[in-house]
Picture (tube, rainbow, N blue to C red):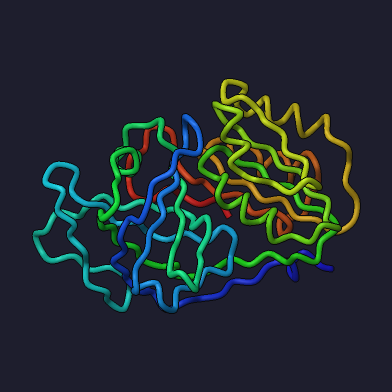
Length: 266
């Protein structure tokens, strides 16, 4: 299979939904799962394992939830209205029949999403927009390598769950706590490697260089802090000679950046 045949982009109609917190569950010292529910989830569609939705949070001071209108190009806020905190998150699981969706939050920061997740309680409201589109990666592979930090765990967990058991899967998780790796709930045939956060990029590279070589048709997926994702893309393309069409490297966040969007590398 040629690398250009490994992926497909699919567009979706962008819709804004108002959802309610059903429950909050701690997955470990660094991660919280929020289950959202609501009739607005009728028709929700998330076929891509790394799909992302925009979460619209209440004002951290007034607790008021100000939702935008939906225009042709996306969300439109009233003139003069201060935009609420908005962040991108991957739906960990969507249960169509129950109209429920799980979102996993890393909670060792001070950003608005982290603070909201730590305090969220049953009945709280949250705005959810998207996904606008999906990036689909073939499951007809001989191998798949997934590399990410704590913010990438939901996407990696979705991917290892959907891949056939005959695909050789190696996962590398850069995390502060081993319990975060356990939150992936990976199948037995998947090899999951924990790399302590303090080891950083060098820890990931050391683990990759020590791993057995994989043959056949494969795909590498990376999601992490901007500089780490950029360096890993360069490693795979320049040092390992991987075709550019066989890797997706995304920046899920950038050191020192508290803004809404992080730059993407792919």
